Image 1 (cartoon, rainbow, N blue to C red):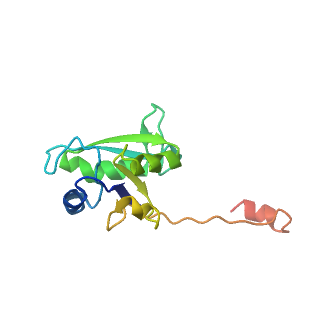
Image 2 (cartoon, one colour):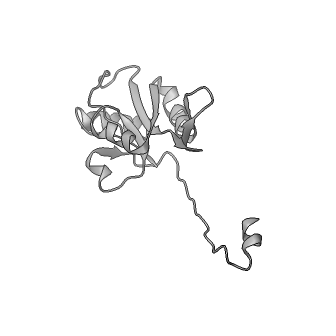
Image 3 (cartoon, one colour):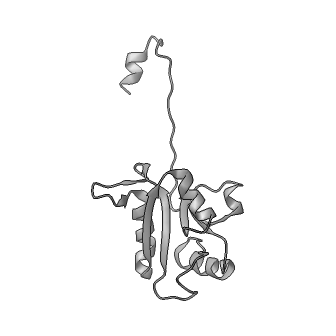
Length: 145
């Protein structure tokens, strides 16, 4: 998954700086920080129910691999990240509409129309699901796997 950001105002210069400094490309349309600002503030939206990638911790704050990874990348730079959890579709739409700065997602042709993606992913997640018929004579054995 890559960090993706809105492509509006200042996209070329900011993208170059952010990609060079942190390996991410997020360009803010309603920016409160200018190119070269000492401590930019970035609103990053994410799915609130996708553990272990992103989820709400007991205190209500967002947690998971995205929060940990992004904090590790940006903390040395002094950047302030605000993590906002919400339904997946709304998270993407907020970036599309310029109401949020970044979203961690896979690059698809549609998303590339309104987001820029980092050259290297924040993390790679390989997963698979095994399906079997409940009438399978070895169903009980398979369930124990």
